[in-house]
Length: 128
Image (cartoon, rainbow, N blue to C red):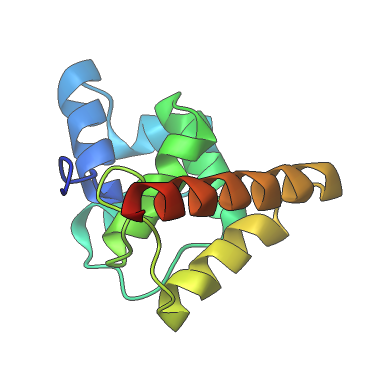
């Protein structure tokens, strides 16, 4: 069963701007990004995953947890997320996961591996 569709980066930025009245410039200033970059993230069809540094900055600019912004970025490039199903083995999704993980501390990378293991176990139990 498929859950609700995850928001994309465009959705997050647009919804935030509509809710707060903030401009691209104000979000960009808070994030340490150029206003044009924020605009492009909202308006463009993403063809590749933004860097983890950009996602972390955007999360600060939108005052959202990085995990939410990461999930939206994954949805933006066509990856499945926690709310739409488990990650498949498609290379772009594995590359995305790798890009996210490479920005984490070694301790957090170990936690991510543990979470992936728990999800795989849950998925196997659901199928049984």
